[in-house]
Image (cartoon, rainbow, N blue to C red):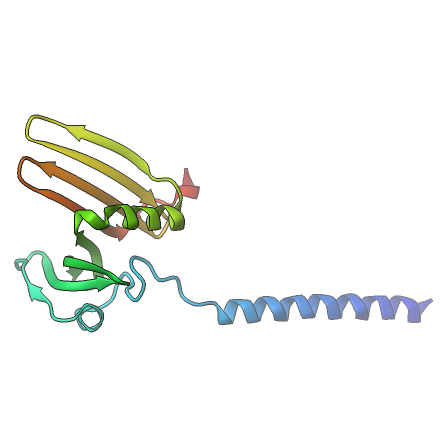
Length: 169
């Protein structure tokens, strides 16, 4: 009887040990979660962001470290301008991409495919119309804005770290 119990215990111990090893392998091999756009992550330094986006220009003041990069591509879609903010100690804190309005449908469809249905709203007054789409991914707060004025259309996507995880509500 003792041999039967010892064999059963040894078998269970091997099963638990195997499960722990598999869990450890999964934990160790997991890639870090990259927020914002592929290739960028919150907290990156100016050198790291510049290596990804190319030449940047400082456009802020001493209080806000704001930079722009022009003629960038996001996968295969041209972006006329990227504006991003850095914090001295915390690195990359926000991004805003300006797309051609003709690319809006494809960009919005991609965001919907990746993050699901957004919260949407429209704002109208005498001078302009705005459509807003918002996603909270848990890592990022993504806001897409289409703005129409009498003589101009703009389509922007902004990213910043999310301060509220959806599962907390």
